[in-house]
Image 1 (cartoon, rainbow, N blue to C red):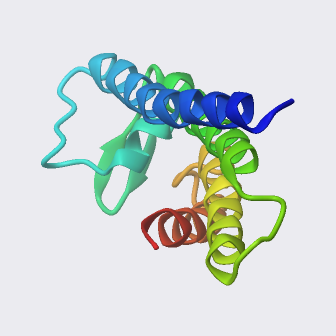
Image 2 (tube, helix red, strand yellow):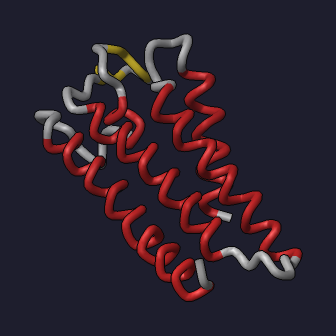
Length: 138
């Protein structure tokens, strides 16, 4: 595959990644009567069972949508990074970008698999969120 094709495929994946994320979030939020972005956390949308978290009753009837969106987003970001990343002479910056991207791509599926509730999942969810948020924001 030539470099132009690789960059084009990577760009398509980079454009699709947030769209998949936002679609999953919107579907899950629309399926939860009374869900409020001001009151609840985004992680609440991924809880498929009736739980209590930080004193709030959480249950997302369409939790599968955001959880699938998080996983698909991570796969698309990783695919994009691997297509766009320079392979001939990697620089220190491109190595850090790869490490941070891999962190993001590991953190999001952990968040999707381990929900903030029940209580035994919460620590795994928190670690996944920290890895994903740190990798994504940096």
